[in-house]
Length: 79
Image (cartoon, rainbow, N blue to C red; front, side, top):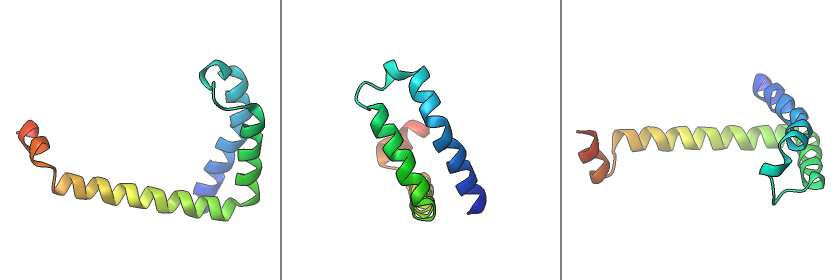
């Protein structure tokens, strides 16, 4: 969990740079919203980290279940 939070912190710290250098890609996000997200993430590191860990666990389980029991049309394509 600690490594995950450190990675999250590095990502959050790089967001303003990414926004400034790629602002044309983020038409619907203001710089203020980017900073608000950073502040929220830094103030609630444990909460945000746990939320993202739970989300990753859920998506990994969902992917594994999909791989074990694909819908019929997917199984047909994979044959």
